[in-house]
Amino acid sequence: MAKSGSTTTSKAPQLHPRNVHQGRYNLQALTSSHPALAPFIRDNPKGDATIDFTDDKAVLCLNAALLAHYYQIKYWQIPDGYLCPPIPGRVDYIHYAADLLARSNQQIPPQGRRVKVLDIGCGANCIYPIIGARTYGWQFIGTDIDVIAARSAELIVQSNRSISKHIQIRFNASADDIFTNVIQPSDRFSLTLCNPPFHASQQEAESGSQRKWRNLNIKPKGTHKAHLNFGGQASELWCEGGEQAFLMRMIQQSARFESQVCWFTSLVSKDKNIPLLKKQLQRVGAAQTQVISMSQGQKISRLLAWSFMDKKAQEEWALTHWKN
Image (cartoon, rainbow, N blue to C red; front, side, top):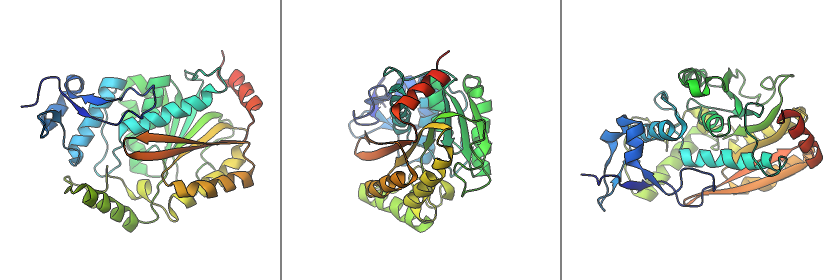
């Protein structure tokens, strides 16, 4: 029997200082907000309450509980086989992106619906718009090239009054057009976000997942056919040329919208890609480039940010777009 009020470790304490998911999950509190989590709680060898993180259904339910408890999301479901994101790391991205904007706002992250954000590849889970809207009150447009993912994200948005006025979902019919035909002439975005597909093929994605499970000496449970870590469809996990090719194309396209976006950003999972991406940013004339390291336990990731505006232009952007 799990100890009353006991907890289980979520992430190591390297998370962003404003991240509410520091330390250990309070499963008792999470279950109070989302009772469906209760059947998945079990004892670990030390007698503390935990869940089986190799069970995709348990992880999905944990995410729903986290979103209910911390972000007041009453409905959150995704189709079988779609990416189930680790929420603490996604929250870190939002906070570090907010810090970029704070540089033009007296070191205070701007809040409210006048801050407009574009999420490239919002996925069926719609996680970045949810977190950004509930944490900072930002206005989001989420796009996806997968029609099922876009419909799922739209259902989540429309099923939660707390975010329904903050988030709009747009289906993008062209996988090649990351910004083109996505950013409209009247759009002005303070941020763009992206968690790009980082594998170059389905075989590479499956091989990487299997290697993770072998290293952990764990046999995964669940219904996903290839059982990729946290699930995921092809468009979420791999594309021709992998992460490097995707981001090179993203940078190239971003130059066409230099006056419509204050900061472009993306996660970069492979450190070896950074030098080439920096060279690409120089070629397209980026005025500012930032690489921000993020740590979640043993996992290290990077946030690549660039802007075609200098600091003075960004301060003018803040006065124009964020101030009443």
